[in-house]
Length: 526
Image (cartoon, rainbow, N blue to C red; front, side, top):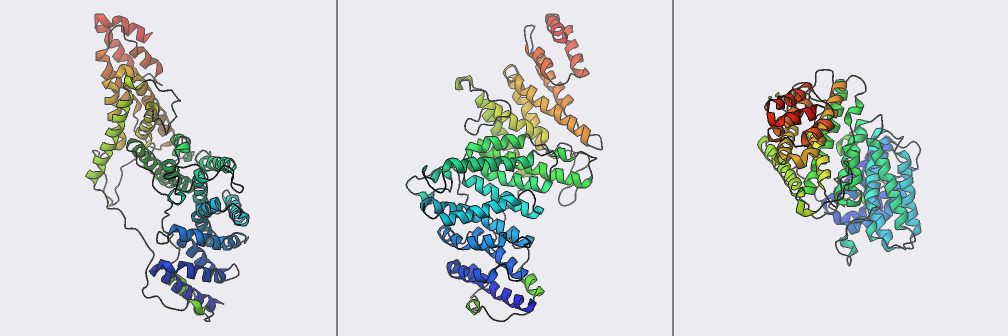
């Protein structure tokens, strides 16, 4: 049996080499492989088959129209794998990834084929099977399920239509479905997508969080924010309210600290991409491309586990003209430290430039939607304040307990660039430029600083770096010289900041040395 699997896997690998050498052979090779990789074959063959399907439908080498045709042929095989109660975990992971790539393709096919109920029923059964696994499967499978749910939500939520006359040129979304479609009625599918999005976001709202699942969820949300403006506000608001330090209910061990740091970096990258998207909008790109699937074992590893096999798959016997490895896009060139700093400063400057423009009274008064509202359509100032203050205060909350080492092992110096402090400096300047109109920004910012100082003090084993008192006093020092006896700004500031520290009172008492501002000092202290 082992020898048979070894020989069969070797011949299957030859077939894979053929299609990698010439993708035009996929329509011939794929149908001939499907009968060989059934559930009753050796586990090594099943793994190879499932991974080949995932790689096929994720590959950018295969045109979308051919992917759509081939997707109809593999539905039975995917369902067969998923219906096995004790299927190998690696097989299940690859099958779920294949289903994530196939779902929008089958969806587009059903849009134009109203009467093919059997095909849509197969896809619906696969979807139900995967959704049942989302809460109880092994972690690796659950991560793949998260990606599948993201693709379902993206497909079943309306997107932009670039050309109403040419549906094949438009991104696959609910916007392409006729309102009277008998198999996929838009209201039902949009409601299901909304429920699945809530299920996805609930991973960020649970009391006991799993760092791997949280990171996978955050990675899946970026595409939804970029391509689905109707749900971007809901996603960003949830991400802004997510606190990685919930994981630190007990003393922060090295393991927990690494997990929290990983989640914090992912959140920061996601929010920075949101800021970049809003400050420099670009047309939505086609999101059909998926990164190439990487098998967990390469061909040589599989072959070393097997010995030989009878040649019962002669149709796959011909050797390729040229063997190619797995297709990989070249990584982007790494940024130097100087470039990283300059790009970060440029992004910060653009954001504050937009906030300044939104302060322009000639723009009219926009409707207020609450502090946590980030309207993807209006981009009001409150939305920018929410994003920028939380990027400043939560970029490294609770994680500055010791020296930071770079990837080459060198300890970063005290003068190293910090995007958090760069944002704080910009916030300080932004407030002082027009402090009477922007005092609400100062209060919101300092409230975030105070809240995160409390979180750090509770979670850190060592004395954390606190920011509230330093910046509150700095803001107060900046506005006091410009106050007159009739100003109400000082009273509002002292009334609304979350905590009064002794340094604030000392500075207010100092106003009494100026005879013209004694009344201001007395009113503020009262």
